[in-house]
Length: 211
Image 1 (cartoon, one colour):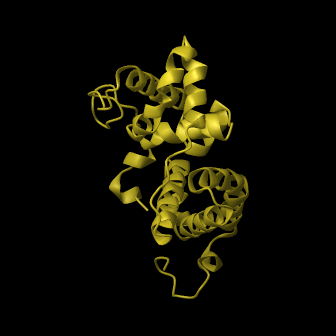
Image 2: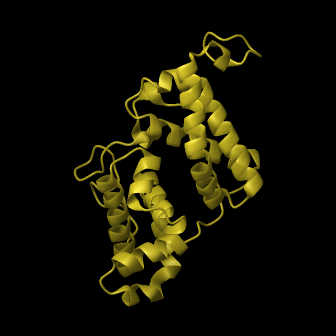
Image 3: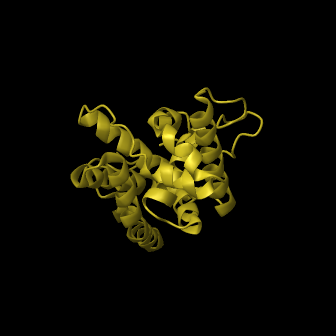
């Protein structure tokens, strides 16, 4: 139920015209991107569509408040990620091993000698699990779906430099794990608030902006 709106009533009926137009413009601009990412994580058109529909429903019910937020795109992305997780729970599935193609491509793209890493990809899934959510998202958007840095930044609601930083940090960590077999996260890497941690994102948003 939307705050201040009786059950069964369309919340948009009480919105100013400008709010309705801005919501449908956002829906039009982001639905295809959200579907591509949800499919990459869920592996099913039906599951991806359900997760995205529920995400936009949640966005709709929060839209007037979201319009006053400084980081609307980050908040919407967090809603999408929550609905993708919910979809797994509803289907009572255990998450399947993540498709490693995007991470292999990222490593090869950034490694000075990509061939030295090829023999160790059996450890890649374990290494990927040690990345932050934003690092995984950035790599999937750039190397699985094929978005440019600019497109990924716009979708995540962050700066291009931050996307590049996430990808670079992810690749450095993956390369180190593949070379050494050590999977523990070093101090300051991928831990909000620690020295060298990436800037706060929707994953570490203030409590009042948590969907």
